[in-house]
Image (tube, rainbow, N blue to C red; front, side, top):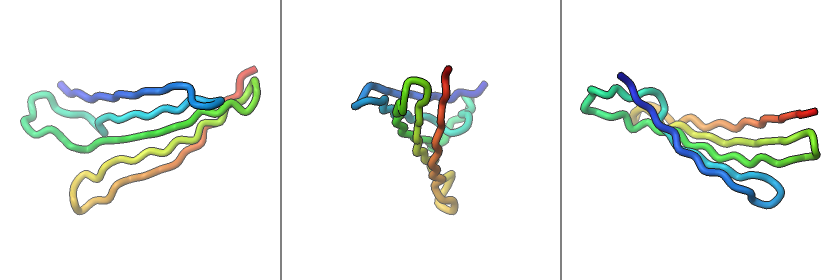
Length: 83
């Protein structure tokens, strides 16, 4: 069997919502004695532009698998419309 976990928190900050999360990247094998140390982190802020549109910029990073690898960092922007 495999395991993975993800923990997040969010709350109102100013006119929008600020959130952060941390979790494992990939799956951990339950029977394995060596647990991977590869983690993923993210932070977002959902900002309501008007009654029907929300913009959510997000920054994330994934730790490197080993010393020969480098961390992966990215930025995304999600726009949500509701009518």
